[in-house]
Image (cartoon, rainbow, N blue to C red; front, side, top):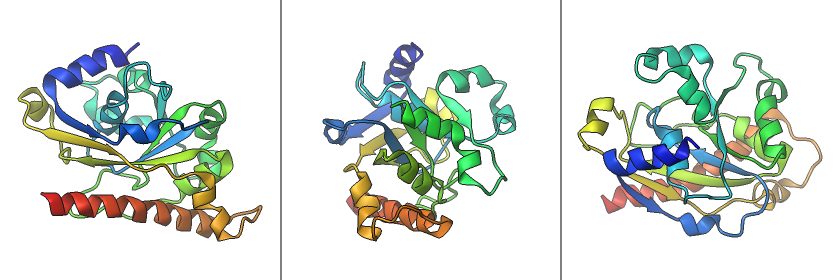
Length: 219
């Protein structure tokens, strides 16, 4: 239910351009949305860009530990992040299966998951930063379709800028990458190592960089 007021807020305070929604048609099973990370508004923008009553709702997202959100507690209590679908990964375990168990569970239930493979908000608008291997693990373990999403115009977004409609946010949904695209060409083995997951994550990043570079040339 929170997405109804969220969509209204986005319409009122954001100038948004949404591209590539047609790529979501016909996708079966769970979806991992792989998104470049530009601000803490990102998961709200991505989910808010989906059509009303989309089959991709509810969308969960991989969040930082709860303590990270205390800096926003004055304006955004933690329960709001949770209502929007935030579920923190267990950092520092050096074990994908342990740190991402909750998110694997969601995907195997057929839910959508928003992932920020850079692992943190980017400090540059010039490039997409290297990806962590967790997205490779999630894609392999659940066989979920990966939909890269490129965000433009949202870097370092502030509350003041939002309320004054300073930003023009573009949300671009790219061509889906299915399990065969990501893994079968690597030999179709039954066991993948951490390095394999990182290689898959880098393959996803390269696909996103192609779209990202085209956008930079356009502006």
